Image (cartoon, rainbow, N blue to C red; front, side):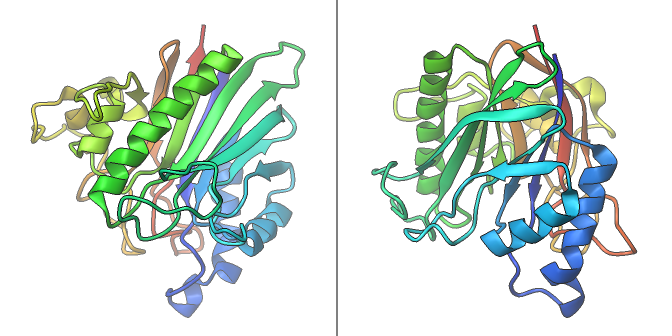
Length: 284
């Protein structure tokens, strides 16, 4: 079983130049998704209005998820899927806080409520291939919130895998470069809260590197590989200088190939202030 998977921060519809308002950008986002045809897309920062406009432009895609606020009307970490190939068997959401089942809850100095949406996807081709997909957005201000959020993600992800017997993907905007403690924890390179995760990120395929990778700042081969892909946040300015903050992780039993940071423009303009990242995930 092979699935094409994308993570894509859409940029909330606020504080942009008029030509980059969502009413214009949504068609660019839809064009990028249509061109690369992922089976699954984890998006961040989309509000209900943004997502509903995009859904009308994507046609064969549906999404699951809820807003992050108590009223659940704020930004989503939506999981989109191609209905021609997949169905969402079940889904849920939790908050990255000390009260993960309390809508709108905030902990650890986080600037906003932070969430993780998850879904159990099943292929509709008769193969009964299934996969867990989780999508998140870590805080952009608080490092303690990023670290505690990463620990909670690992704890919940491990429980979901145990409950379903399925491997899992974790997509998202982690607001953290490859040598950040939250990312190093998820890759199993350091302990946090007495735990050590065991995930592989899509950038670890050094054979896929588009350019020679710089030396890692903390001696991590995986950090070296990720940095070689360049920045994924560009603030509508473009360019590659820097390191990624958007990731796709997988549990053991899944492998990646063909990871790409998509830096294309549509109609001369970028679809978002982040580049989407796409990869192919294989199991078995």
